[in-house]
Length: 405
Image (tube, rainbow, N blue to C red; front, top):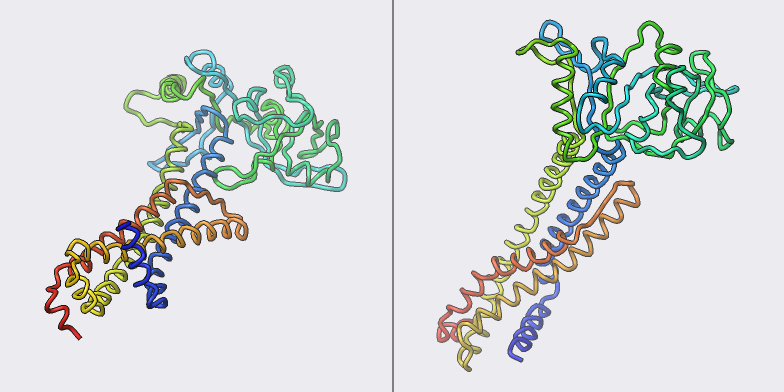
């Protein structure tokens, strides 16, 4: 009963000056809504990053050339790359490897009838789709026999289907790349954008032997090797095995720098999500400053309220109210202000993040812990910034308070 009475007194006191109460809550409302919106946008972006990383495949370890001349790195675009013997050795000699595929990149316009389209062309083996977790939607994958015979067959992504065939069935049709005819034997399910932005569906996949012999010619080389570990826990061991094996095969003496780079899916995941987490924390911290400003506003208004209600405090004390009752009353008013502002701010923040998602096509995700945390933090703001004014009110001399005009 006593708590209900104190709450009723607090609400009555706040409703005496509605405009001032609303303006006081405004700082908390803006702060909480900003925190919720920023955390939702950051969490949504991180979830999309994680999804894109999963789309790269499962337990992937990638090997790229990294040649240095005169102390300058030419990165993965330099040098002559790897050999098919390197790929075979990786699959046969390194424990924990589930599958391995070379990756040959070529370029050229894909032509069908009177239409043409420039797509990324990848030469791989029959294990590539398994490694990349990329299912065939219609048709079938090419076989190892077709890889060995450099068959003129291709698999095409959704974007290529839309640009060249406009909804008609591409299976069995012939497209020309650099004037070489290739039969479409399958279409791939849509994967969407890759981690760094390019459209994965704008892709043509063929046997690496076909890409090397029929498109790249004498300049053909394996530009990268994609390895799939048997399980996530052995990726680091597979990476270490790759380093040792390739150093031996490339005759790199001890102490000399590697002419290749190795990247595991875990490293990519840690880098991408780590950056996203940092940005989310930074945005949340900046938005949290608004909460502190709102708390200072509550303290300021509560101090003014104590001054205005000095005589009221004196009357309450003269009829038996104790110092702790006065302290609890003013502290309750501060907490009510901040909690109401927090609740409204949570609703506004969720609404803002939803609006951003619908209007700007940004991924948003509001975690439950952000809502709970914002609510508790707003209550803590009320207690922290409301304590000093409440304590000041409780320490008033009742006789001096009654004399106050």
